[in-house]
Length: 340
Ligand SMILES: [Zn+2]
Image (cartoon, rainbow, N blue to C red):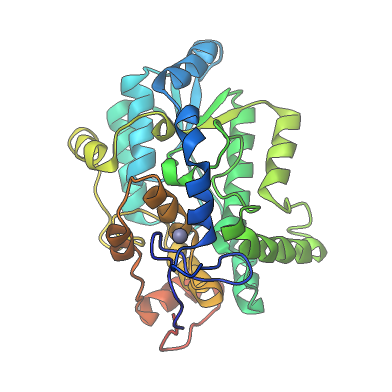
C-alpha cells in the first residue's frame, strides 16, 4: 500500500479524517500551528504534580497505585513515585497472557529493589475477544479494546485497595489536551482516531450477544464513568510534568533497578506485550498507521522527536512466523507474506 505521508509528522493521508494540503502537510499539523500561541500557557509543572500528591499523601493505606508494564516509561514512573516523591506505592501489573517474560522480569526486579508492595493480575478473560476480533476481520484496534479491559481492571483495583491516585507511565505523546486525565491516552474522538474509534465501538457493540462479554464497557468513557460512580481515583503520569526524556531516565533505571531493553520490540526501543505485534500489523493493514504513529506525530509537533527518528522507530516488517507464533493461541493465522 503506497500512501503519502505528511511532510512534517508521520501520519499518512487517510480519508476522510487526515488529508494533506498542497504543500504536503496534514490537517493535524496545520491545526497545531494555529493553536501554537496558547500552547505555552497550559504547560504542566512539577509543582502541579506535587500539589496533587500532597493532597492525598498519608490518608490511605497506599498513596498511589502504579501501573507497571515493565517498559521504560512505567518503570521510571515507579522509580519517581518511590524515590523522588517518597510515596507509599502499590505496584500493579496485569497480564492477559501475552506479556513477555522480559517485561515481567523488569517489573519483578524493580519492585524488589524499590521494596514496593506488588500485585499481579493474570487472566485469560480477553483471549476469546481477541480471537473473535481477528477471525471476524473487524478493523477494531486490539490495543484499544485491551485498554478498556485493563483500565477497568486498574480502576477496580484502586477501588478495592481504596487508592486515591493511579500513576501511569504515559509519556507526553500519549497525552490529550486535558491537563490531568481521568481516562486512557487515546482520544478516540480526535480526527486521527476517528475511524479506529468507530470500528472499535462497532465491534464492542456486537459483543452484547456473548454472555461472557455482555457487561463489557463499550468505550473508555464508559469505563471512566462507571469507575467514577464507585470510587474517585485520579490517573496521572509524572512524565507529563517532568522535563526529563527517556535518554535521561533509561540509564538511571538500568543502573538502579536492573532494567533491560527487550530484544524484540515495536516500535524500536519500547516494551510492549507480544500481542502488540498483532495489533500493529492489524492496524497497518486496515488504516496504514497505528496509534504509535499518532503519538510520535504529537511528539514531533512538540519538538520532542525528529521525523527521522520516528520513521526509524516505526519501521514495521514483521516475520510472519513471529506473528503466527503469537496468534497461534487465538486460533488465527496470517498469510505467509504480509502485505503491510
Ligand atoms: Zn502532519
